[in-house]
Length: 293
Image 1 (cartoon, one colour):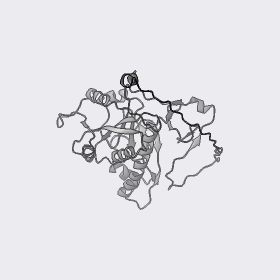
Image 2 (image 1 turned 180 degrees about the horizontal axis):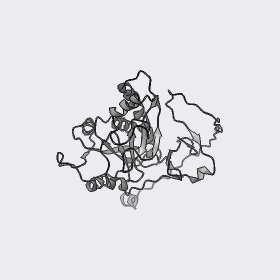
Image 3 (image 1 turned 45 degrees about the vertical axis):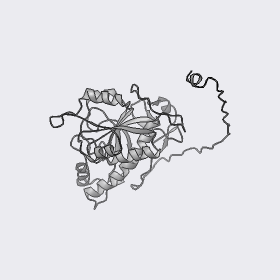
Image 4 (image 1 turned 135 degrees about the horizontal axis):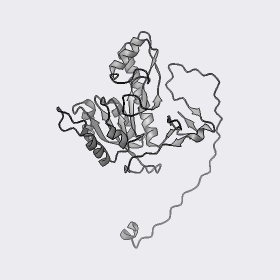
């Protein structure tokens, strides 16, 4: 109807798309009975799901109302709208933003939420023209939003997914319920070890070194109403050397955080998160839908 209204005397030629035949040969995946993984390996571990277990997996669907985004013309998929929460420098926020600009993430950061208006992440957002929202409202921060207003604000931005990137406040129940299975957090240890209230930043790495643990690494998990107890989605292992300081462990883990978070957000925006019947989330391989990471 819109076309006829603007070009009633114009004929629109039909478009013919050539069909190019192709073939692919897939080699069966063989998994040995015993496997060992070197501690320096930072690559995804792929595994194939065989029936009948695979039939118990159902695709995760975004349950947020509204949230329509621009269309990616190359794939026909909708670009997702992302809200990022930070309390500090926001290095993971910056890496996700850069990946979005480069096109590896099919989504755009449309708003940044922070509890510290002067933090590095908030300053970076302002420099890039990304709106900054303050949360929560406190005696020292009267311009902060209430939980109800925060949800309304995110709805106004048509946010599809919420990404916590160094946000140190517990999320309100209102937000958790408004965005089911749509809020991710990154934690600098291999959960469930060294997680929970009080475990954040350098405190985590000091505890890891003091424990004598030989491995650490980032964990990305879905967010529930408690600290670091949501379902684990992805992890990456890094070695902890006997002579390491907490600062050296922090540097090694942070490098993997930047890579892992970008890969997970990429999968989230491409609707490649699936859920086992027992409630465990998995990442579907981009190249083979029958393989999970």
